[in-house]
Amino acid sequence: MTPEIAKLLREPFPSEVVGKLPRVWCKRCRDAAKAGRTCDDHTKVRCQQCRNNITTAHLHLDYVGHAETTDRFLMADPDWTWEPLAFAADGLPAFDRYGGLWIRLTIAGTSRLGYGAAEGKEGPDAVKEIIGDALRNAGMRFGVALDLWGAKFKDSTEEQHDDDAASQRPARDVWNDARPAQPAIPPETARLNILANARVAIADAGTLAVLDQIEQRLQGAYGRGQITDQDANDLTDAVIKRREVLDAARPEPEPLP
Image (cartoon, rainbow, N blue to C red; front, top):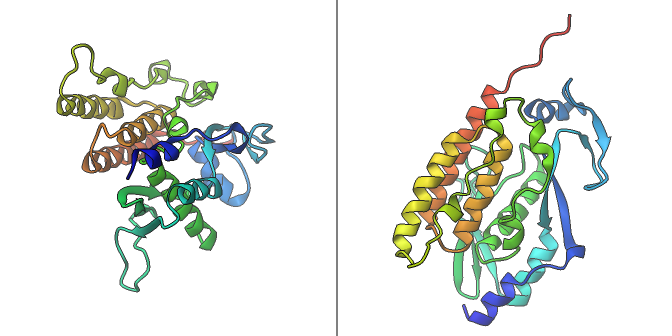
């Protein structure tokens, strides 16, 4: 890959193509959504930012869509391609136990990994969403929309996630903690610092919103080449396991009298 192509991939997107992706943080609302409802603690509203009829228990992530991402790939390399990392017995792409898909994206002769998921959705539309999500995720590793992936949450709704003040502390800025000072430390030492700090931050995460922040910083660190593919895979597994713990610990609503 030439420096010119790498620079093109990392060009910021114009604000008019940057959308607002809603992320429901309340597990009970996500479960109730299958029946078109919300949990007893929240209500459904018409959100003025993302223009969705959605529970009040949501926040927003800046993102660029599948079409804009594909256009950027084509501008950089008309012959770009992707493939799943594994195939099922029927010859179709193999999804993991969480319903997600690992892919290998190749642009200008360079290949990098990506992961896509569809937030528990099912059916053909979910498959298309997973592929689009995987392409955006892999594209981030080339620097596509990296400024959006690495941005911190600007939404103040994290205060709604948990009444326990101790669990509301912001995620440790593990990537800046590991950023070398003067004189510069060797890249391998910086990498090990990131890994150590990230594991502590993941284990300490008290809310799903904090965990989302950590995951975004992890993606940014990988996109900048600060950690390896294997590091990213291992830390992603740790994030998934911590997410399961936080989901399981969320209290059930009190029964009506």
